[in-house]
Image 1 (cartoon, one colour):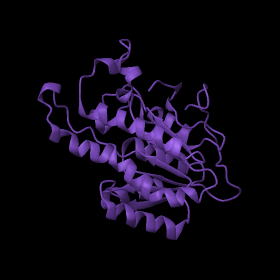
Image 2 (cartoon, rainbow, N blue to C red):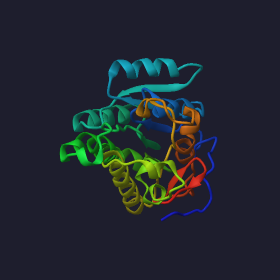
Image 3 (tube, one colour):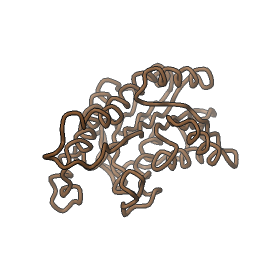
Length: 255
């Protein structure tokens, strides 16, 4: 469903007249989420920093809400219907719409060997990585529909790509794991289906690449800014930008 064969280019401004773009990033008190908030807030956007831990969320917000940046703490647990509903109420009351939703919250669920993995190992990661984006997206759809050019960015992974993981030249092909890769593959399909169902919005998945974060014990070869390049690019596309695609920082990648 890709509408372009080119790598997406970031926009410096949002496709709205003179009003600030309203964005929400989940799982944003550290890592890729925090850096995404920092970068898009620097564009002059109003950015809700979603975090399930109130103290960490407030601390990150205080650190980023400097030099005029409009960063707002939003208590948000993507695994809780009640928490998400309350977050929707806050954004509705303060902003009345949502232009950009970045579903970033994710967990690995541990590193259990394939043969030792049992059904219960899937529950928590799927609850955050798959059901979380569905829960948040569904709840915020009315506010996204209120936007003139809504964008939804699903933060996926190259390990969820059949094309990438079957390429012997890629690091991802050497990873053997059932839970995390399959959760990201499921998120990719969720992305494609949302894109088809929401033609008025731009809905895309991104692979940050192997970035040094807590998720991999800071073993990644990319720095945190490089890891957010694809996220920021797809968050800042215009109304005529691509939808239903999967991108890394260099451009489209295979499903």
